[in-house]
Amino acid sequence: MKNLLLTGLVWLICHTTFGQNQAVERVVVRFFDALSVADSRGMRAEVTKDFMLLENGEFWTMDTLEARIGKPKPEGYLRTNAFDFRQTTIRKNMAWTYYWNRATIQSRGQTRTMQWLESAILVRRKGIWKMILMHSTPKK
Image 1 (cartoon, rainbow, N blue to C red):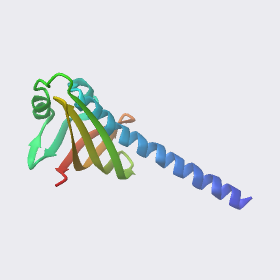
Image 2 (cartoon, rainbow, N blue to C red):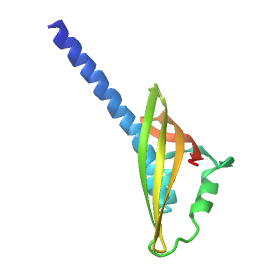
Image 3 (tube, rainbow, N blue to C red):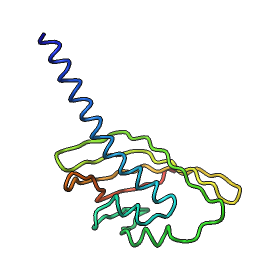
């Protein structure tokens, strides 16, 4: 009976943690889904008001990011993201994750793939996870 109870408790902890980790990772995925189609509103929904992106040795606010992605895209432009989350950790109302982000971009009849090593820090406010900081390093 003790083994069955212990097994059940371990199962519950693992599945609860896994579900929380997925909730954190979904914020990152939704952010990039919005970025891929230059949806500023969608991106802002996933970040705090003081969100900061460390990109290519520069500090970017959401205003900076919107200015960069808001430029007109050629007809037929399509960006698809794929993530390989390596670790996601949650401590109370703070979480951090690091992952590979691979973007496949189709534009003007050509396809190119880019990859970054990224990390994100999230905070939970009123039960909702939001990114407060992201760091992105292009893979060479």
